[in-house]
Amino acid sequence: MTREVKRQLNEGPRIRREQELVSKMIHIYCRKKHHHTAFCEECQELNVYARNRLSLCRFGEDKTACAKCPIHCYKQDYRQKIKDVMRYSGPWMLLYHPIESIRHIPMPGKGRK
Image (cartoon, rainbow, N blue to C red):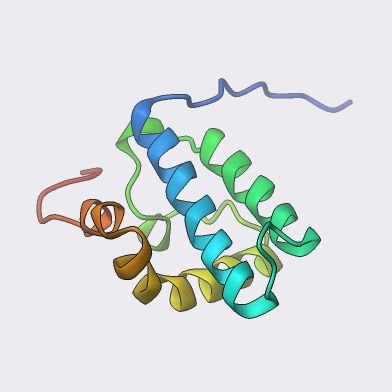
């Protein structure tokens, strides 16, 4: 007997911003590393997975950066892929999306307690 737990999707403004930010980072990575103007199949799969994980985040609007989260909700292979994407795309974000980059910088005292 399996018990299915339904979790309500997070659709708040912070989650939506995080979803857009991760999509932009994956897009930069795909364009520069895989030389595609749109998402390649691998990057599209990662984008869908990352956005889904954000929608299901148990901390919702109070979430902190995923790297600082005590609960790792990504499967190991996806966690490594998203780390690679963020490590590569982070510096490029300042050039392509400077406002989002500044907004994403963690501020002392912000986030979950």
